[in-house]
Length: 118
Image 1 (cartoon, rainbow, N blue to C red):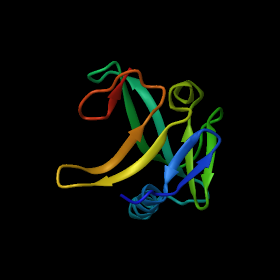
Image 2: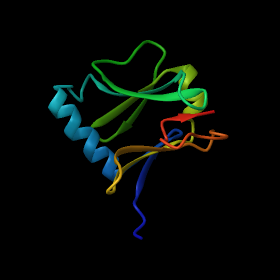
Image 3: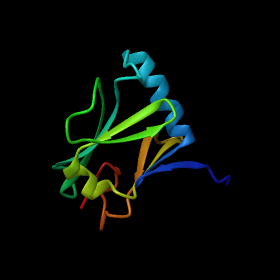
């Protein structure tokens, strides 16, 4: 199994393959990389108590932490950063799953679908 290089910036890691898919999706959604980006967050709910929230945003909010990976920006609100600091976002393509995978060292347990944790 080949090791994939990750880009680390201030506590959030995003693999090269994940960055490729973020770029493509931003183009498809019409999100300008100069002003917009990917928003990562957490919200209450899901099988294990907290769920990951991932979407595009046209601009950062006032208190967001902004992480830059070349031409891709990632926005994380301060409350979510407490849970996401140190996390790696990967892209996975298998027969059973295609999409983003979150490797979070802060999660004490997670559900089978991988989108909920506590």
